Image (cartoon, rainbow, N blue to C red; front, side, top):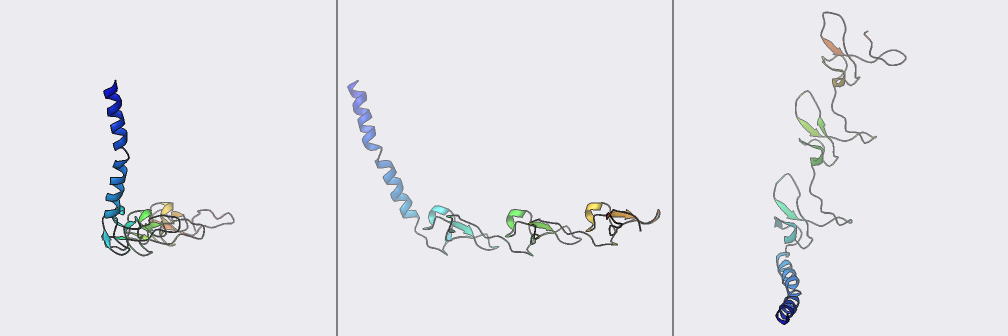
Length: 157
């Protein structure tokens, strides 16, 4: 029993030494200042290592006023694959092609995709700005047409 007590006392005496060694090791690693290349947050004095352009290289940067570490986001007009890549958090199609681009949100903070103008060929209502895709006669292909009538319905012209 006495042996177990001494062993426990010895372990407790050694326990506070481990965090001190860890802190010293951490302080030695975090020496890079803002603007220097890095790979991990712990390398930087600001504890913030992020990309700051289209270049995949990461650099030490300052944290925001709210202690956040924000990476560079693509401005409007750049190609994207998802909303999180863009400063505006809006990645949508912008023409007839399949490419997606960062674009501004509406004043109601909506991220709307590009839609076909009136009289353009279409297959579905959702493709048109007017949200109205109909065949003008039995032989013609479907086209985007403006909504009409008092209730702005999708009616043939």
